[in-house]
Image (tube, rainbow, N blue to C red; front, side, top):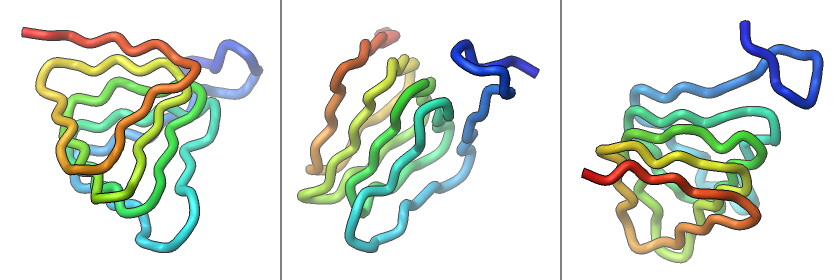
Length: 102
């Protein structure tokens, strides 16, 4: 099992192949540092949503509702086929975005 480079614990990840809908409750839904979020399906952003630390390699669809925010604070690689849909905000801060365009 791969290990996170800054620790001695196994690397953690979330692999979404269906529909991942964060809860529509006030506050921030946070994927913590050290956990990568790989989206191969659809992710519906209904509250502020942060992917911190390891970022991930999304291939699927992100649907960000109005006045909502999807923020990556770790590196992220947007693969071919990724879709950033919806009228919400998409932000990368303190990280690098690599995109595969075709």
